[in-house]
View 1 (spheres, rainbow, N blue to C red):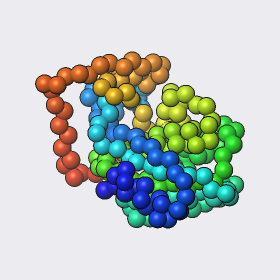
View 2: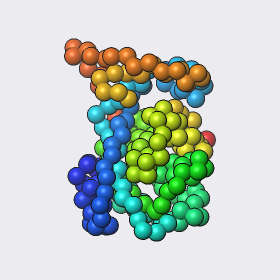
View 3: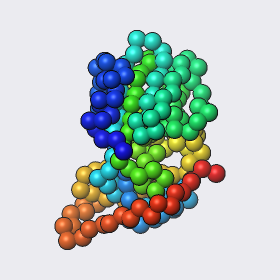
View 4: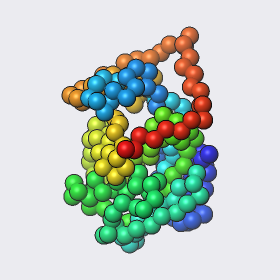
Length: 208
């Protein structure tokens, strides 16, 4: 599984150009599993497993994406953006598409991502990829989105491009109403409490 150094090194090996690095955490849902897409309330918190993403501008309109954990590559023209025939590039392409629809001025980019969030284990690895991509594009192209707007872009991108129904702040959990989009950071400083996650090895699939 990837880490920050391996993602950065792979980017430099493939593209030999300047890069910026981002990371987005996985999450555990303390209360409210599967109530998010039914417009209920949830109480998620970030975990210490991440998706790491390296990004750099290109001189053309191509989008070049490498998934370190899959040892796979995908590229497409920004001018002919459409869903990929395989699933994993769509986490990135869906976010880029939402930026385009909003009229944001983008150019081609190189993107490499990987991480240590267990895949298909209910810890939101896909949402972390979408979130990291949204934050990376916002910073790289200075598009001016707020944190909540970026979260919404990641949400819409995963739903539209992948058909997934779903929905941080360090040291806090987040009380979030999925209907009204009201949220509240709740401090979670409980050194005597440990939340232990077990990977059963059973994969799930939210795509219907």
